[in-house]
Image (cartoon, rainbow, N blue to C red; front, side, top):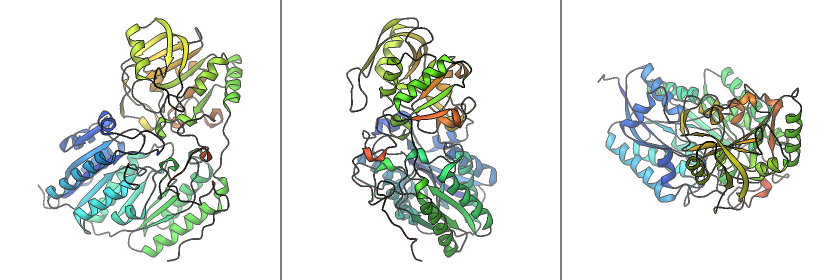
Length: 515
């Protein structure tokens, strides 16, 4: 091994926690991905794997930029759900720390986290993990983390890392670039750079529907931050604007700006305050109207009856598994059935029992489909309809577009049920909870998106990238449905959110922190 080979530990515990959703248990992580040791690097070097793409990109970029020795520890994650069970999380931290201590000399640590995790006994487990890593490796080892742009950033997280790098796109399509950026920054630190990082957090908790980056107030902030970073390229090495994840309901909620300078902390602070002030001055723009269920059904009927009108796609915004939703509310589905709407692709409904029944009956079988049979919750009610089993699948595929592109997903036994007779509503039922953000959720059954007059997806925003070839923004509608991810934040009983915050508290005030 070369004397110049740098030793870099790899780890991460990835979860976006919705405090109102059921607890994320160890089994949920192991069902998604749980890897230790050499398996992490082996998977990261494959062209397609279930790993987060930023981890694969980090490993592959380190491979391409010089000698190094990976020290893979533990990488696990599960789809967004509730608070992580505290005992399991602490076990992960203990395993990572033990791995760091056993690894000997380390030059760097790369952490692939989400950043909006809460635990059953800890309001800032991301910070707990990062602080434990820093304590284990000491002040002279480079520690870099990549995070989702919906992360909630604490001062503990900022103090424990040399650099926090956030996604810049929502829908998220830049994970590869952020993993590459983390690797390049790691190399720069190895070459002598000593970054200075500054965090500014605002009392601004925007609804998720206002955090798209192609346009709107959040997109303006991202663009402004990147332009200013380019203007200060000699000194500013990263600007990350985190929109926050309101549903974590934690003291660290709030839109955050993290600026990393090459050497000059004052320049980082000045730019962070500049961006934060821009966000605050434009805070009134962080609102967005949604479509009612009734209006959605009416539009779906109009589109179905007029072939000259463009097809449309509806977001079942209150039940987004990508934000901790159960993926099985029936408000929109029941309304479409009652309205007699035709030409609809609806997906994906998470119901293991219903999927298993469809597989036992076989394609072509007609039966009384019972959704949420014996498993009702506040939002996910029982719903019955006569149905035909149209198609079956094992649910194993590689994503094609958007957030899941080139990433392997396994939805378990899955089925398409036809409701309302031929040409009615085709409902995709899956056995593993994921948001419908890729056309493969339908295409794995041989369905062509272009054949639908309306598509309804259980996804809040990431579907926009996956379904863009068929549905530009003017054909996209967010439906105001009840559920664990409703963007109407006043509907929730907040316990830990810092108050006052805008827009829930319109009279909230803020001034930039003094240096």
